[in-house]
Image (cartoon, rainbow, N blue to C red; front, side, top):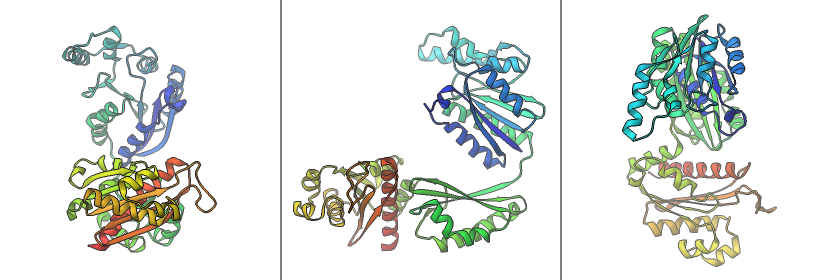
Length: 414
């Protein structure tokens, strides 16, 4: 089955928000074996909605549309769909009851615009929304299933999980597909592709590889389709094992989890504690680590030593070391790691000092120059990096690189 995703909203077209809904929907459909062929964003205008449906209906088996179902005047999706399908808007009693009860429970006044959220095009299948007030709608015409969902992400995701994905499984036959994700860090996509060229060329025809990069991280998605599906587990294991022989130092997980979770799992498994001392990353590593539930079991704390005075007063970096080598140096990073370990009494430590930019670089130490030190027991590893890109990319690369170095040091030590 082939599909298209339609996002309605001027806020997407002017760049005010990112179209994260389309990315999430595509991931879910892909897991089912439904191929997404097109993604489009269109204005909150009737003619744009009608023209898009004219182009897609009968062409794809499934259309997933998001946005334009709110209570405000610029939300015109329902009216546009009613006109397109030659129907009228009618109140859906169960939805109206739910909206009324929801407002009563919260002590809110129910306005006319809220009541109109219970209106749906006559003849559509109503998808009850247990996560908000706007119901979803399911239409069928010319061999195409059209699903219209709210644009609010958690409402859209709830309706997809509650109604749309189960409905697709019941109504259509989708090919069996098995995916595995290998998480890598430390090498850009183009370099990784070069390293894996021979391995990739040797893959069976029914195994497909996709590179999914973001700053400091590349996800490798290996998918088994068609005739491979019957022996997918065996084929995937065999080829992933070969992959691990080629880039063992860059793989941090064989499932789609963030690096901070992979590091946290390792610390928890080994009963270790961690502290961080950050300069150019401004506490990003600490923020990433503490975004994982249960991180208090292994993460003790952090010092953001942005100014040299904090490096000396809080981390014990000797002023003469700063004077002789500069803040962005192996010596200072190692002093920062030692100081934060002593300050917090942890088993391990990460220290980062660099030049995130866009200013501050020199010919000797250009923007992106970063020293990272990781320490565990009597062992430490220090490494200099030259990250490229804007400030945000440098910080992302430095943060991810530091956590991967920490993982590798633990694995090599224990």
